[in-house]
Structures are given as structure tokens and as C-alpha cells.
Length: 361
Ligand SMILES: *Cc1c(COP(=O)(O)O)cnc(C)c1O
Image (tube, rainbow, N blue to C red):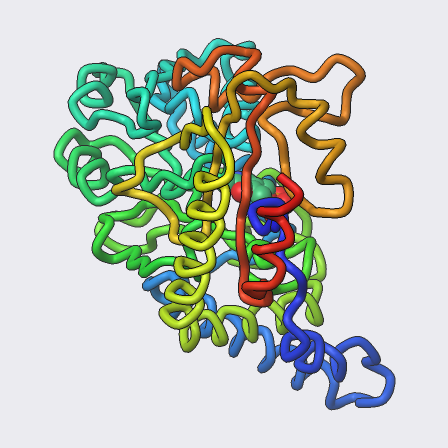
């Protein structure tokens, strides 16, 4: 129940990857077969995103894509620069911004409302004549809220600012059309949509205008010079297959996970007092639920859930867990943030599993 962290690789994806895991069996023809397979995957990914295949740059995942997009377009400008972003972005956006700040770039972190949604006017007010880039995620990975990216894209276009969106949690889950967004830079990750780990893409607008970015990795000129290094063919083939399956099955998946989510929420709220949902209920991914349980401490909550994959509102990897920066930005107290659970349902979850989780909580 932690599909925002990662998704299981769909068996149909593994099947598509298998022939490419053993190149020697294909002798000299392998090079051609591999090249064709990569180009097919590029088409499959572009169809899911709604861009031209020539705009798709394969990377190692969303973290690399964010770094390439944010650092790459700041380096390419060569003038005093300013970035506008939001406090609830993923660390893969916030950390590159922080590094650029240490190098003299100015960054404004807009605070969202207590429903997690950013106000388009607040973003507009943050723009200055030095603003080069506006980066706002499409869907949040903790609270599932869907930011007003169509309006933000139009604002960026009107003000002559580049618009970048981390669409990792949205693409393949809810309808997404890069063309409608007026996008400049859009990215996604295979392992968040039932593909393999270690592969993703950055889509870079190539016409009206062509976006100039500086690569992070030089050496050989692969991927239109933006990402050198021999391509991970099996992973890219799997990514393409995963994208194709999402195109076809996204609507049905969303309908099913929404029904499971309703079952989960009704089960929890029938049995427990003091529950509150974090994030807007109107603009939200169908498979996300993030709840705080008042009067409980986070550790007690998770001990009872040790055989269920969920995330708490704190980073549990350290001895002294920090409350989630996303919940803090919404004004949730540290104590309540620690007593929060993020559920992310997925393609393979069943009603029985939901009932089991309700019982345990
Ligand atoms: C998972 C995630 C990332 C990081 O993706 P990787 O492919 O694992 O690097 C970045 N942004 C968001 C919104 C995510 O959910």
C-alpha cells in the first residue's frame, strides 16, 4: 500500500525486457534490434506524456531528470538568475535548488495553502525580472494533491519564464497531456508506473521555442548530447512497455483504486475518531490517502502495521525522525505529522487487503 514510494514491476513488463537481458543470443543483429527497441520505447513514453518522441531524453530516473532540468537550464542562461518553486516539492527538486542557492542563484519557495494547493497568484507575485525557471510538481508524492499546472504553464508562457514540472506521480495515473500544459520540461520515472527501477525520462520542448539546457554528463553525445553514456536497453524497453500498458489501462486502474480508497477511508473513519485527511479532497490522485490520527504517537501507529507497506509522516530511517516537510508546510503540527500515514494504492491491491489494513489500524 505504498505505491508512491515504488510500484511492483508488472509481469508483462518483465516479459518485454527478457530478450534484451541477453544480447549475445542475438549476435550482430543485436545492435539494430536494440536501437529499434529504444526508439519504440521512446514513442511509447511520448504517447503517455503527450509530447514528440524526439523530446524524450532517457535518464536513470526522476532524481536525475530533475537535476538535469533545473541545473541544466540555469547553467544555460548565463545571467543573474532566480527560481520559483513550492515548499512541498520532492527532495529531488528542493535539493538541486538548495545547491544552486549556495552558488548564488536566488530561489523563492512559495508556501501552499493548508489544503496543499499552491495559489497561482502567489506564484505570479513571486516572479521577478530575473526569474528563469518556475518548477511546480503535477501531483504530490505524500498528499496526492494535483497542482494547477495548466494555469501555471500559461502564466510561465505569459511571463517568458521556463516551466518545469515533476510529473512522476501523475503520469500513468491520471490523464496528462504535456501539449495542453505549455510545458518546457516534464519528467517521469518508470518505477512509479509499474516499470523497472533506474530508468526515467526528461521531456525537453524542442520547438517554439527550443529549450537550451546544459548536460550534467558529457561523453559521446547520446540522447541528443544531453545525457551521454551507453543506454540501459532492457530498462528502457521495460519503461516503454509500462508506458504502453498505462495508456491502455490507466482509466480502469484509476476507477478501481478510487473504489478501494473509498473502502479504506470509510473503514477507517467508521472505526476511529480523530482522523483527518491531509490535502485537498477535490484535486487529488484517486489512489492516495494521507491521514493523521490525533492522540496517537507515530511509533505506536506503525508498530501495529509492521506487516503492511505504508509510510509515516516522518522520515523513519533516522533515529530521530524529522516530521514531513510537506505536512509541516500545510501547518500540521510535528506531533500530528508523526502520527500520519500515507497510503498509495495500486493496480494489484484487493478489497481483502484493504479490509485487513482497516482492521490493523
Ligand atoms: C519517486 C519520486 C522521485 C524520484 O524518482 P527516482 O526515479 O526514484 O529518482 C522524484 N519526484 C517525485 C515526485 C517522486 O515521487
